[in-house]
Length: 253
Length: 278
Image 1 (cartoon, one colour):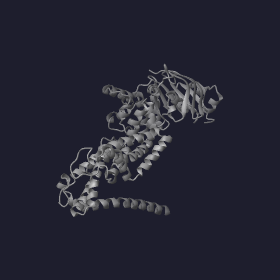
Image 2: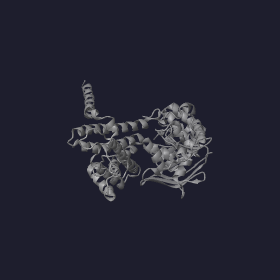
Image 3: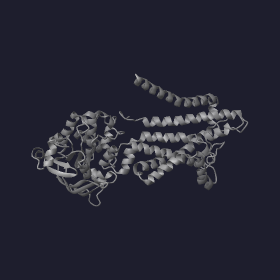
Image 4: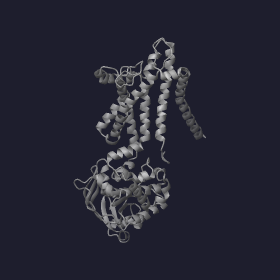
């Protein structure tokens, strides 16, 4: 089951550059929340702060309160490796492990964290591939085909399956469909809709139609600040802030 | 019109340079076969050298000795080299890394006889006798910079998004480095290791006062040991016609062993490759 996310006073830096300013946001469990905004507004940085991926970039760091369920992400003694195990992430460009088979890719998170039960692993791999709507396309070549030999859309679904296999509570998606064609994109969107039954999904997108299609809540970022955060319907039909309106009506960005 | 001419010119140039590169290699090999094949026989491959003046005998002890020394060298050079390469690529983006990188490049250009002297004073002098082990140390030291730099280059070619994918799954950094990055780079790392191996396999100078050579069988690591390159050197400068012939045969066998070892590694590592891996 998914869990909710509480963000209070989150600041993030690249070197001395403050790129996220005092973000407050409450993400509901088992809902899809979209993060939109023009390039460079900090939306990717924001989701990368939620699972402490931001700090893997040299000289980048973040401060503030992020609670995922009961877990205090930036609390003292919090281990970024443990955080990332519970918060899955799907990236902009599909990035399967090129030397591993389809099965190996999905099982990688389990295997490399010391999971040894073969039978249970088979079940988890099958379940994850089914959840990611990829099972039927790959089930005959699970061990023979490289993850890199799949098409772009299949690769992205493989990456989603890989994230799901470690059974996270939250799934972060950083523009997961921006490198895909329309058919693959609609498959991913359908998938996101299914996934919220089991997970809390936060999706970054620069495609406003996509946000409108998949998300119940939408946050609009501009220059490192969260300008407006509300039900998606409200954001797109009656935004409270002039800047949000300008953006969604295409006046800038 | 001109574009076609330049295009054809460039193609011809590339083909010609490729031929120029490959011709000396083939010529050397052909000449070795021509001079050496006549002396390669069962006795040559199974017997130890005969005393000066007697004909016959072989280099079996040197063939095994070369294998032994290379085994020790690889056991030292490959893990240290790969380890250093991992450090340089994954952790060494700093001053200390630059120092190591510079040192490795200098070590790479170091005359091999100097490395021999180092191994002599580090191993032979304290132990008070020549040994296969000291020869292995000399060759191992020579392998380190090549392997380290190749490993570093290959790891740097692994896209960062692959590492991010692993971190995103909650895989610790050390695990990511070993099981994801190094595995992704493995083809190139193996090539680097084979280059280092092939380069030191034929080295003579660093073995002169470490492994020293031996006319008899020896399988002990702490005893003077024959090596093909040493044997070829000794025989080639000798006054005996029969030894000259055997020197050619020894050189031929050495080259064939190196080619054989490299090919064997290539075949074993490419087996089990998945569909669609470049």
